[in-house]
Length: 243
Image (cartoon, one colour):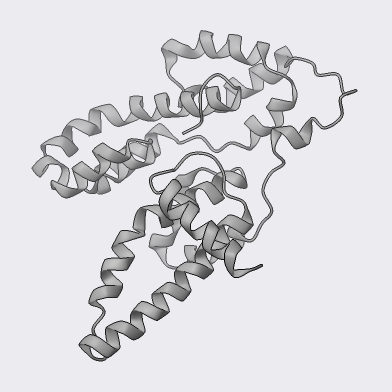
């Protein structure tokens, strides 16, 4: 590791991926950012103490707010890299869940599609009827009912090697999202978890539209969750970019 690598990685996360919750972040990208962010926070803390005195962190608070989205983004992408959904980041709210997240952050990422197909001699076959059936048994209730036939056709056309990755996906549970919406909807957490970051932040700023928006979303969140899951699966199958 060199200072140049550390700097370039930090700039990439903060500048180029400021609002990026898609794709993957390997251990190097994640931990380089954590280290750089920690060092900068220490320096800003020292400056705060020199300017405003001990116990004041005005500049530190501004800096933390400025890198909040990149911090969340790289954490979500690190979870994607080990085959887990970004909503697992909510474990940090429990306190002890932070330990689990740290363990996961140290794990190596799943093999990328290019790595799985390095052998040109490998013959790829499509998914079998049994594999498609098992996928729907496990995830059918988490997907839009009006798109099941379309998704079934995608699965039959997909290479069999995609099945293993699909089995490792943790799609969002619509019923669980309804509970999240009931308790935390006024904070916009429900919309953020289904990829609607912009409206989620707006919902947070307005406290759920003074309650009205939060109430409406109680009737919409399950369908939004199923649609989000559909986009995730379609992305894995190569039909749409993963959120």
